Image (cartoon, rainbow, N blue to C red; front, side, top):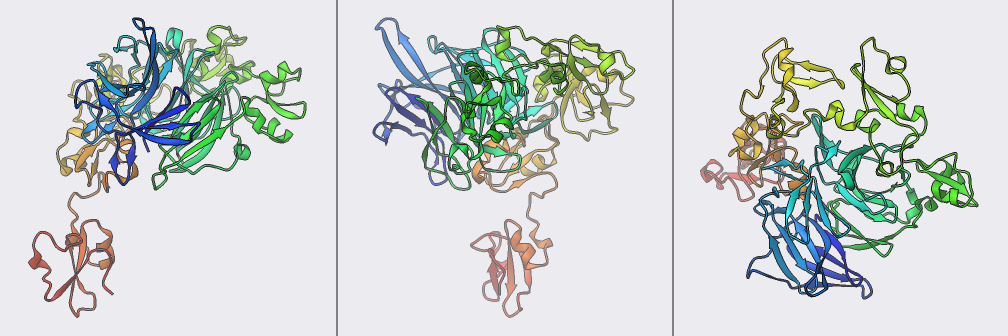
Length: 612
C-alpha cells in the first residue's frame, strides 16, 4: 500500500516502494509483463555508487521520456519524488532508467519535503507536482514543474481558485482540453481539514485553477487515498477512504466533456475488495489495479475494463434516463449526450454541457468559486451563458450576468458583483498555517475569530476556535483585545514539541485544529493533519490528544476490567484474594519499574485478561 505503479514500454507495468505490514517500508522495483503475466524483481544500480532512493511510501511516480539529441535515442524513465521514509518525509527527486536500471538523483533547493502528492505528465514536456504535506512545510501550496530535459524544478505562478492544502488526492491529464483534473483528497479549506469530494481543473496554457461543480446531478462521495486513471474522455475513480467508510470499492466515472458524474453500480462486474492506498494505471484501454489496504495489505493485480462511453454501462432505459450523467437512451442502448447527437437522437433531456445553459443553473451553484469556475473547454469556446456572484449579503448568490443582484437576492444591502473567481472572498487570506498566512503582510493567524458566513465573522472573548487565517483589518473593528500573529510570533508547530506533556498541552499550530497528537509508538508529536498520512495501518500505535494523560495513572483504577483496558496497565492480584488486587504500570513481562511492588511469591500478574 502507498506504492506507485506506472505503465512502461513494451506492455509492462513498473511498481516501486510502498508499505508492508510484515516487511516495513519497501524500496524494491518490480516489473510486470502483461503478455507473460509475470512479475520480476529488478536489480538496480545508481550513477553514484551506493546512492539510491530510501525505501518510501506515499511518494509519487510518473513515466517520462527523455529524447537524447546527440544519439537520437529516447530513454524511458520512472520519475520518483518525495514520500514517507524511516527518517521522515523526503524532498528528493530520482529517475530510474527503465533500460539500464540505473538510478539518478536530481538535486533541488526548491522542492520541499512532500508526501501524498501527485505527479502528472503533460505531453512529455513537463511534470506537474500538485499538493502534498510534511510536518516541516505543512500543506504544499505551490505548483511545481519538473523539466525532464534540464532536470530542474521551477515554481509556476498560477491563478484562479487552487486547493489551498491537499494530499491523498488523484490527478489525471486530458490531452483534448489540455488540463489536469484533480479529485478528492484530504483537504484544508478555510478553517477545516476533512475528506474532499471536490473536483478541480488546472487549464495548462494559462495555469488557471477552477473548482468544478457538475453541470447536472450530484458530486461523488468525499474520499482520499483512492486511485484514478484516464480512459479516453472519462476519468475513472476507484476505492479510497470516504466520510462513511474506512475502505471503499466504489467506482465513479467523470465525463470530462460533459462535466458530469456517473455511478455505474453493478455495471462494472463483481466489486473489487474495499481498499485504500491502491495504485491504478491505464494500458491500451485496460485499467490495472494493484495492492491496497483494508485491514490487511492486499498483494493483488486486477484488471478493470470499461467501454469508451461510460453511459453504455447503464443497461436499462430507466437507469439511463435517471442517471446523474449526461446519458440518453438512443436506439436501444444508453449513450452519452454528445454521442447520441452524432447518432441523430435528441439529447434535450440530458444535454452535454460543461457549463450552465439556463439562468436557473447558475442559481444552483452555492459558492463563489463554483459560480465563476471556467471548465477547460470554455477557454476556447465562449459559453452561451455567463454567471456572476453577488456578495455583501450574509450569504452570497450565483445568478446570470444579465440580471440584477438586488432583484434576485435582495438583502437591503448594496451588493458587489464578482465576475472573476480570483476575486472571490474565499481566496482572500486563505492559508493553511501561520507562516503562509502572515507572509502577505495583510492577514493574521488567530483562534479568536470564526467564519459564520461568506462575509460574517464572530469574535470570542478568549481564543477558543480552530486556527484560521483572516484579514488583519478585523482588528480595527473588533470590540475586544485579540490574540493573533502578528504581532505575536507564530505558534510552535506540533512536530517541534519534544515531549508528550508539551504536546498535549499545546493548542496546535495548523489551520483547522487547536491541538496536537502524540504517538505512543513513535514517541513523536504531530499535527492532526499529518495523522492519516503517517499513521496508516496503525503505525503510530495509540494516539493521545488533549484530555488524555501521558502517564497511564494505573494506580487510580480500582477494578481489574478498567485496568486491563488501559494501555500499559496490568492487574496485580493477591494470591487467594479472589481477584482482589491493585492496578500497576507494566507490560507482558510484569511490572517493569520495581518488581517488589508485585512480588511473585504472594501475587499474580495479569496484563491481557483478568484472573478468573
